[in-house]
Length: 257
Image (cartoon, rainbow, N blue to C red; front, side, top):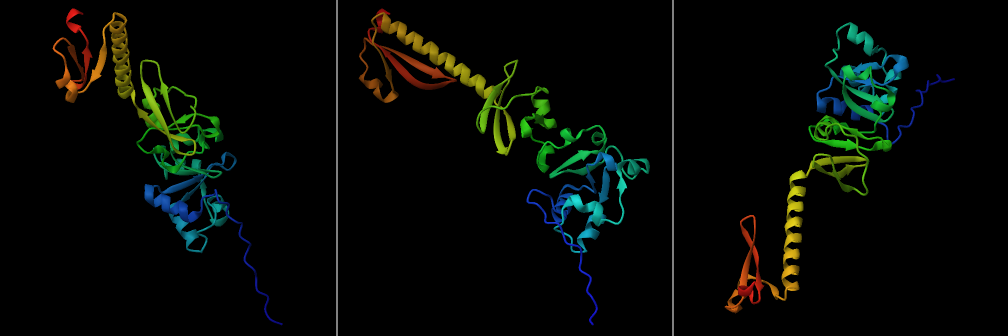
């Protein structure tokens, strides 16, 4: 009889929303991070080095899920042990995996964070130097840049993929969805201030014209090309906005006004 061949253990199928080891290693090199942590308080948060992950990939396990690292590595250490041995400091940053959510976090924040706080469903680029906010799971979160911009004020989500929020003190922000539940924040306070100023003077102009017409005057909008047809008895009012001539008003019998 021939020798019985031992079958390798059956691999678990990686779900679409899970991070594979090859994807993790690529991101570790891309962001210059040396360690990955599996968020698991009962196990003390197992930490795996970049070299350990490379070793696993060399065995042909590149498409296995990051959540399987504990079974694929022969040894690993909890975060507490690495801190006590000064392998890591509280200033170091780790890739932290909780469920299918992968984030870069400083060691100093991990021990104090709850599962709800760390698993907010934000993307890898959440900590980029741009203001991002999230309403993932109906819970509002702001990265450091956005928190400073919004003065730490929690906000409710508006309708649609783009909306405005006006805060106390006259600040106005535009929120544009760039990723599911993730919005880029733009400070449009100056633009909104200019728009309000234009609206005000437009309303003043309409009130002025209505008043003239109510007194029996004929008021007509004119362009520069049509000025040649003006009667000498007409009054021409030049309309200027921020040093630019935007048009003219012809007031009939304006000399009597």
